[in-house]
Image (tube, rainbow, N blue to C red; front, side, top):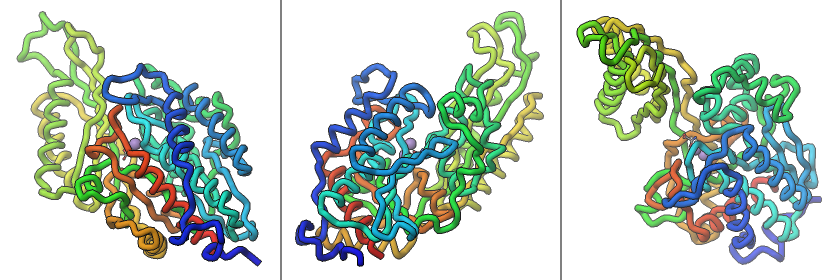
Length: 435
Ligand code: HGY
Ligand code: MN
Ligand code: MN
């Protein structure tokens, strides 16, 4: 016999659960303090790179909160951490929610953390309401959603879903300057995560349903004055590394006609990427060269080697590939003209993730019951849900972020929007866990 969530006395009329917004916001502010960056005039700057002291301290703090909530904790070999509330029928596939707490350098305090702490508060709200879900409900902290340290995003969820080979993952080297020698295998072991990565993978339909709460990281909800978005698809991310090798030399003595300047060639390559992306005429085609490492990096030395990291995305992977083909044509011509060598390395090229129509409908039902208008939308940011989608039906809930800003210290979501997102999440998890 399982408790029918719909008739629980402690729910309010719309079948939703009271969120302790004060506690949730306080916990978000507390989590934001696990960072090494100086306070920024623009807002609460956070840098929390995976497996750094800040990350490990934040994980330990989160485990204390989860223990207080009576959740069972499991960590896998790459640090994905599972906080389970056992249901009345524990052998059924669980319902899960979660996100990430790692943050890129000088980022904001809401990207990922709203999904982790909002998910925890959603579970506590369900607990406070007195329900006992049929299916267990699990909060998941996913390791290294950001590509900062190892150059590939969603490391933990890729391994969970079998999208990244364990051997390749452990051999990944650091991509941050001065960390090129470290490997994931060493870094995760130093952080206390040992054991074979092959044991991380979860089987198909390990979860009955997965819902991730996240800030939109774009301007649409705020522009349309809507408090919630329901994601129907997640754009297809890809990333590449380009190494340009020329000939270095003395900035004074090496004459211009004799130069094979790697940085000038890199500049042409970056503009080629921008030009071909704009040329698609599609608003969903985006490309960014976010890092440019110049060697030897001295003002009076002609650059002999440059490494670029390209992040290119589209809702249509074939259109994304057409841009890459056009860039490759330019690369060939520019390498010949400038007599430099340009090597392209594929890091990842993923398909878009399609959300489960059933879970999308459950989210819409909950929004209707709460009298909340929600926008059906595509996510242009990628998320761990992109890869959980390979092994379970997923959907995402978005809340607005001020001016659509993210990955910056002035990233901001309002307490009211965060609380509403957690409230709708709680109701959806409760419904899905009673299926
Ligand atoms: O880059 C992304 O889309 C995500 O925020 N890591
Ligand atoms: Mn991010
Ligand atoms: Mn994120």
